[in-house]
Length: 451
Image (cartoon, rainbow, N blue to C red; front, side, top):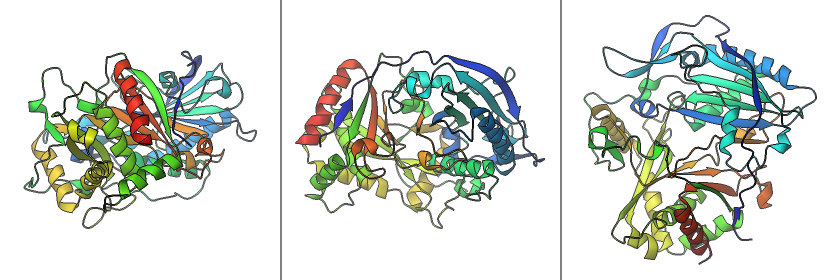
């Protein structure tokens, strides 16, 4: 079975969303007023993440009932996750960003769409109009107020609904957000917490004094930024971009693994071969210069890499960007197995000392990850496996914006049904590029996959 590229379906531009009520949700019990320390990883990620979770109709749980249950669950969650009802602030003494746990609450929005769920298009296709299912946190309920969490429940005419969640990335990484959703689902069902979260972010504090023991070419200091360069791969592009969804079947991924194993002893994983394949296609889709260096960034969970390991229930951001760098000449003509080795080595580099060195780097310099492309994987986070009282989501996705230097990995719609294979073995790859670069990328994607 070959890979395929989903043809762009006609996209619904206006979801016909009507806002009925916006309100604040406060902790269901009084919480302690305090400041929450943010690690150097947390404070780099000072932007919002918007996700949409789609649910089919359930006769026992109409949207109005779900809205009430979710509102109550959120109020209980704001006791356990007290920082989520707080606000970001700059500590005037330390000049560090932190969270003021002041109990000012999270936002909650009740809305409806004039459409049925099956009328809004392919849920797996990146429709920017899905942004209408989330609510902006800035100036949410009053001018100047920016809650760290805003939830919007939008009901459809069929009884299905979407839950759109906006959270500041300073609060969670993908793994801890999944734990938060599991706990929200448990609270909605009046059950014990799925996991007791660990909120101690001092576990990722810099050493005193800081000791930077590696060069960290994957980071760039703010003072070194070119004019007009604001936030690297996290910056939205103003260019006209084409969106495409490339599907890799389980067979495609197995073939990539076999190609890599033919001449390497490195650990060959599905993620590593997919990342190497995408790196080559992205680097060579721009005007060709054999001597140009291309750097790919990709997230690595550091919980188990520290000594002692972080608790698996650690709430904050415990993910760093690994990197691999090669000349375009090597990316075009070198062996695929060598590219996979470089990706594998980048992740392997993330041991206890390297992680502490990069955290200490963040203590000394203002900066953030810098590379040509970032592969952001939502592939195995399992948001679609969260068991709410009203059932599991039909599909979950982040709201897609114009970021040409971020490639997103998602599970296929329906947990692998499209691939005709088990659970989460296939993957959907979402790419946004200028039209000419997209044409080249697509050609290379199939060429390197089939050679």
